[in-house]
Length: 464
Image (tube, rainbow, N blue to C red):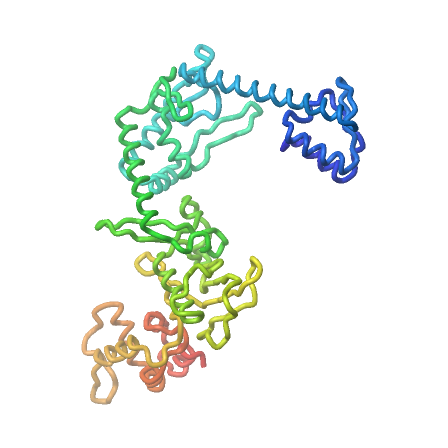
C-alpha cells in the first residue's frame, strides 16, 4: 500500500480526478485481500469503477464480488508461497555458508567472479575491525570507543552503488558498534536468525578475542539490567533539554560500586556535538539533584509529599526550569509562589498549568549543579556573614586608620575574600542584618568584579 504510484493513484481518487481504473490483471493492483478490500471501499465512496482487461466480471452483483474475492485470494496465496520459497532457499544457502547479499560488513568486499558466494577480505578494513576489537577491550566502554574512533577519523564502510552514488563513510554510532562487535561473520560464520553456520569466507578476528569481547559485552549488559531494576527514574519521558531533546536516564558506578544516576540528552548519549556551550544548555544533570529540587518546589507550592507523577513535562532552559503540570492539579495561587517564580495559564501540549522557576545552573568540578534557592531566606545569609568576618580578620589598621593586610593572601580565594572588607559600610550593614538580594549568594558575590567606588559597588550589588 506504500508503493509511490499506488499512493498517487489513491490521492487522485480522493481529489475526484479518477472515473475508471483499468488494469491488465487484478493482482497488478494488489495481492492482499485485506488491502484490496480497503481500496474497494475508497472506490465505492468516490464512485470509481474498476476494470480488469483479461478477466471480465461485473462487481455490482454478488457473483461478481465472489469471483473477485476468489481471484484475490489465489493471488495472495501465490505471493505468500513465493515468499516462503525464497526464504527457504536463502536459509538453505546460508546453511552452506554462502553470502546471500545485503550490506557488506566492514572488512569484506563483494564476492569475486571466481567464488560468487564467498566474501573477499579487504586487508585495510580488516585491520580496522581488529583495531576496533582491541581498543574496546582496552577502553571497556562502547561510548569511549565511539569517541576514540571519531577522533582518529575511523568511519563505517564506504562504497559506490551501481548508479554511482556514494554510500557509507560516516561516523560509527553506538548501535553500529554494538552490531559490529557482535557480528559472527568476523570469525568465519554465516549468521542465520539465531543460528550461525560455517561460512565460505575467511575469518579476520581470532576466536579467543571475539569470545573475550562477547564476555565483556554480556557483563556490561547484565550490570545495566540489574541497575535498571534498582534505580528508578521518575522523570523518564518527562525531562527535556532546551533544544527539545529528551533526557534519558543513565547511570555510572563509582569505585566502591555505588550507583550514580543522571539524566543525559539523547544527542549526548549518541556522542553528537552541538552548540550547547554557546547557549549554556544543560545536557547532563544529576538525577537526584533535579528530582530533589522539583520535589521541594512542588511540596512547598502544592502539598507536602506530593509525587512527581503530577508533572507532565520539564524543560531545562539555560537559566530556568519550565514545569508543565497535569490537568488534575488544582490551580496554584500567586501567593504560594516565591521570588521571581511565575505561573502561566496553559502548556504547549494543551491544558494544565506551566510553572516557571528562575534557576541558574553552574558547573562545579565538572558537574552541573542547581544554584538557585527555592525561596528567599528570611534573614542574612550565614555564608556571607562568615565571609565578612574572615575578610576583616585578614586586615590590620595602620597609624592613619587605613586598612592594610599584614601579609599577602595565601590563595586566589583569599584574594577575593579580602575585598569584602572594602565594601561600603552601608552595604556591609545590609548584608549583616537582612536577607541578600534575590539570587545573591557568596559564590556570586566573590565572582563579581567589585569596584573601589562605593556608589559603583551599590549599583553592582543592589542595582541602584
